Length: 367
Length: 222
Image (tube, rainbow over all chains, first blue to last red; front, side):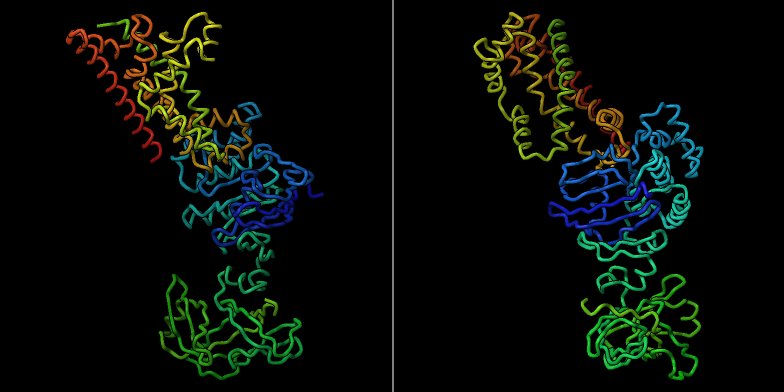
């Protein structure tokens, strides 16, 4: 029996687009990913009862929080949920421990204080209990916010871009701590983020939102390797999205005509010869051959081209290659910086690549 | 120095400021967070005393406080005395005249509470009254203190409406500003000068207190 399972079906009644139905299990973390204005934060506010112009229903286990048909609306303060805000939303006039104790207002002060002290310890803030929020660092404030959201044993945890206001080092630490903390709580967690890496690292499922609609919800690895539509691929930051035509079909393989070049793709999907399809190739599906070795021409889906752009990004180099057969359609990927240095890669240099067929993903033809 | 007038001025200013605090909180909070269509109407009504001449305000108070009007009639029935030319009438008039000085700063103070903080008080499960006194009031206390000082200072300096509604009854409605006017009319400039200096010092002290409060608020938000 999944007593904390969250189910909802919500449609907006005003000009903020929102049309989402989801079912989230206890101890499942679903990341809402999407650009600004895609409805992520509005959805969290709806679930908390803070945004009202919607119709539909929300159930937390057997408990109905909202049902527009039955005129049920449980007030935000009566829904058992915890929310962590991007701005931390700590009360500036209260100390760390007073902030954490607040949701336990029905207990005696002594009981609340004892529980808050335990939580301070859980989020590694022992000793800082009497500091006001402005005396804490960003990471410490977010830990207080997390403890405050969890102390009253909520049935739902909402995280609204919780790590976006802290520096990268702290962000990594906090992500790790959240992953550890998840093992102790059995509630559905919804994480709003526009950081793909964060979603992939933390989420059991990622829900891609656009204009208030769910474009795709899947496990991170499936979503990243098999986006349903070119739009999902682009929202996930995939740049190598192209159009081709089915040239012929072989057993478990499709031969794709890409601007006159034949590309072999693993696929048992039902396509007809002559169908026009869009396809995507993630950066890790492109292999740059060593320029110092003679090209034997037998590489997987070999492509010859010219380096159009080389940009060093820390230990990696972002590279863009214009294929000789399609010079307006650059292939973009990353290579280690030491490789680029050692091979003396430079803009205008001729190179050869392989497009790894197991990484090539064809979108359904209706897309 | 007319100490009786000074005492009446103080009494009027303190009662006005005290009565206006809860009224200002209720109306200011409502105007800050309500999205009802008729809020501009309420806001305009509250702001009327800012733009109307004191004589016009005074005329309407005299009319409403007379025994023939519902308010004045009810008052006479309940307390067996007239509202016009009484301290109570002066107090009611003073509260209404000072409404914009109380409501608007409190409305701004509530407006300045971050939406996330308001949301957080709800998602922390706090019921209305607890959220109000544990979160909202502590967040706007400097604003409330400022409003108290501002309405106190403004009431001390009020002249036109006080003269119209209160007349000039010693020991009942003669405030310090009216007493100064009296002394000037009687060419007793020395007494007028003394009392003016007292009002000037009080007004300056109030404005200084407002500035200090403002600086305190800025530091806290920094």
